[in-house]
Every structure is written in C-alpha cells, then in structure tokens.
Amino acid sequence: MKTIARACLATLAGLALCAVAQAQQPFPSKPVRVVIGFPAGGPLDQHARLLTDKLQGVLGQPIIVDYKPGAGGAVGAQDVMKAPADGYTLMLANTGVMVINPALYPKLPYSTLKDFTPVARTAMQPLALLVNNKVPAKNLQEFINYAKANPGKVNFGSAGNGGISHLVPEMFKSATGLDLVHIPYKGSAPAFTDLVGGQVQFMAESIPQAAAYHKQGKVRALAVTSKERNPALPEVPTAIESGLKGFEVVGFYGFLAPAGTPKEVVNQLSAAFGQVMQLPDVRGRMVEQGADPAFLGAEAFSQFLAGEMPRWAEAVKASGTKMD
Image (cartoon, rainbow, N blue to C red; front, side, top):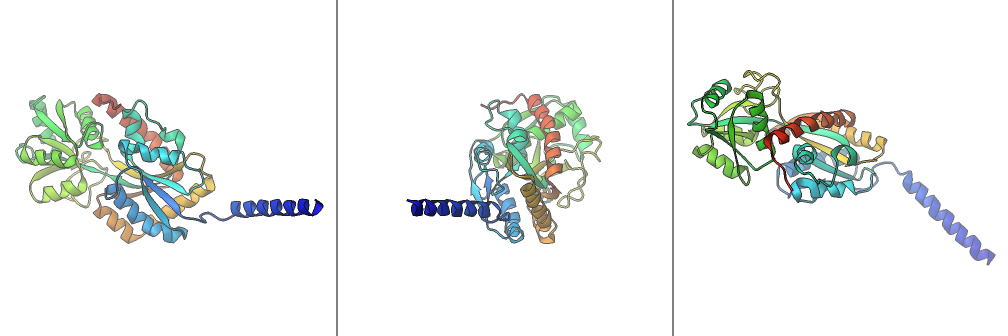
C-alpha cells in the first residue's frame, strides 16, 4: 500500500510540476485565434489578413482567422467575450460592432467597455461626402446652400438603418441644420447605383469606391470626413476645410481581447501590432484598401473607445433608429 501511495504522490507531484511548467511558458506558446463577426472576403477580412500575415512572424506563432458572422457582428463579439482571458483569442472589430451597436440594440448581449480589453487600434476609415452630377453644387458649402433652399427635397442613401453610411449624414445634418430625407437600402451597392442614377442626391461612402467613381466622373466628391485630406482624393478638401468646424467623423478598426486578459499579455500583443504597423508595405497596402494607418496602443485605444461611445450614441438617438 505504501508503494502505491508513494507512486500516486509521485504522479500527482509530476502533474503539478507539469501544470506549473505550462503556466510559466512564455506567451505565446500556441496559435492565436482572431475572430471576425462577419463573413470571409469583406473589408475586415482583408484587414485581418494584411496584419496577421506579418503578426505571426513577430509572435512566432500561427494566427488563425475564425469567422463568426451574424447580428451585425454581435455573434463574434459574444464568442470572444466568453473565451478564456489568456490572450489566445482576439476580436477584430469596427465602429459598428464596438460603438454603434451598443446604442442601436437595446438588448445587446455584450458591453464594449466591460466585456473586452482593448489591445490596439490599427486603422481609421474616413468617408467621402458625395453628390450625383445633377446636383448643382461644386463644393460642400454650395451643397449646404442648395439643401437649405430645398428643405425636405434632398434625399440621401445609405447601406441600411443604423450603419455608418446612415449615421455620418445624420451627424452632417446636425452640424448644418439641414432637412435631408434618409433612404435606406439593403447594402451600399444598390444605394450607390441610385446615387449615380439620380434617385438620391447625397451619400457618405467609403474612400475606395468614392474615389473610383469620382475619378470616372460618375459622382462628385465634395469633402472627406477625416481631419486631413486623403491620398486617394488629394484634390478634395476636408469638411473642416470646407467650413464645418470640428467635423471629423471616421470609422475605425481595432483588436480586442476578453475582459480580464493579463496586462502583460495585452501589452505584448499591443507592441507586436505596433511593430507590424511600422512596416512600409503594410501601411501602403492598408491605404490601398481604403483605411488610414492609425495605430493606438492598449491604453490610448481604451480612452479612444470611451470618447467615441457617446458621440455615436447621440447620432443614433438623433436618427431615431432602434433595432430589435
């Protein structure tokens, strides 16, 4: 019996040592999973692929991209929220998932500021303010004057209720006092088709598509919503330059971990993203994809999110949009 007892104790001691050794393994010691709450092939997927290809070289571990589409990104967010807080599960999210959804959905199953730990903001996404060629306005101030002279007669299209292409024009309305009529579509493609065709007069659209159609002469870009001019539309002024003081409205991409992830792990991941974001080829490809490289570390990203929540909530409230 004593021999068996000693053997059992030895086994338990061995297991304990293995557990301690495993706990002491430097991070990361296995693949890291990045969850995206949307289908493969979209803008978030492109952004993830661009960064994770380089990130796995920095971390020395494979990066697995895992798609969990549904409910405007909420399905993916829940998956990450419930994952172990050990740094091996991250979420790549955008403005909609992190700051618009909380204001849009009364029963959202996650809290941005309570259920996640910000790791790194990696990009900002400005939009262009566009009109069709039938609108007699060559710049933003002329469009404002035109819309003021035609209250309730100027329509703007969007990719759907509550999305960024809906809320940016709502912010523009608030900033200018204009009476514009929202026409929601099921996606940006049909909305853009009707903008070109003249069924709607105004739209806020992502830079790549806006720049392509502007250069082809199919629509007219009046301003961009970023603080500085965009390299894809260098001749187009910012809304601020056009007289809208303080009007800077851009979307963002960022990586988050479950709440409670150890600070040292978060800092290590944040530093790795910062290193990748310095690579010229990464920055160049990001601009081609329509995003501006805009790295923020964990603490700064956390402060940024806290500041974005109320301004987008105000835009949602002004729009009167609520989703079940």
